[in-house]
Length: 381
Image (tube, rainbow, N blue to C red; front, side):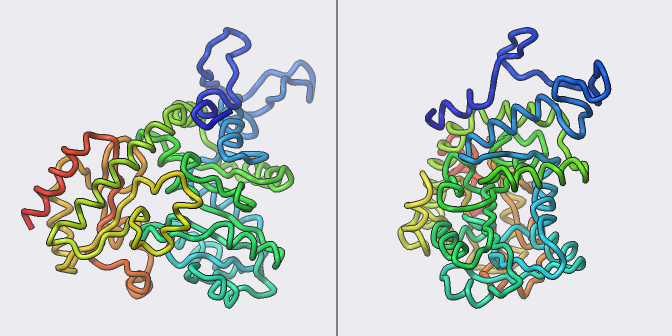
């Protein structure tokens, strides 16, 4: 199947009892057994649910993986992946990543004996300098959050194989429509399905897709043992959102390109971060490993202060001031105080995350209205 067919049909079958074309919401906590251990593949809803099974099969197909496991949030999915590690083992992670990921690594797993080294991943030399005999995983976000840096997934995976190290790619910003890390050599893919997969800002959800069954089964065990599972309604909503993933993301990409081009012309804007620009670092890598350049745009202001950013953030109308991303509606956010508030200011500044940095999640509204909204807000500063 081509991707546009996969989102609608892969792993999805009509309900065998009624013929319903949409996967039913199996709202049950347990299942009747005819004898102890004699059931129809489902015993207890923490362990299995038919709505969740359909979603996991669909996600595995979208990412060309062997297995998918779903969780109650993106961070609980990440938590499960990090539980694959043992005390004393280490992770090399990109130094530009979601603040919640940084917090989970440093303040939760860091206190439980897992080591984390945060480095720029634009060259193998930087990664190699951080890898040691205890390193068991390399953690990638690309495009990164919020600086939209591009990491060469194949380059990192080829290097990791020489060290016997697994690679996990957070594919939330790209979505399976734009990028398939397993095809480039990754072992594990993680998604905050709350974002582009769901696409309608109405559900919190997480997913992990694995290259091999063995790793998938380990994660399935953790899913059941820890219990961080999504409910059937949540799984239904993600399945519903996925059916339009390709058309939504493509429209967001088209809008983001025009927004980025407009921001370059505005005299109050200092820098625009958008992988689609030829001047963007690793633009050629993005062009090679992504179908398009995504629906996210970041920029900072010539008046580099939180007060300036606050004025702009409060002046938009269509761009709603809110955390999250990837929905059909456009959002505007301030990473330093919102999504990345848990990262110390000194660390943020090292990667260029200034006090005036603004992050846009560009939606699928009419582009002329979106540009007018930003233009009006910038003119009021």
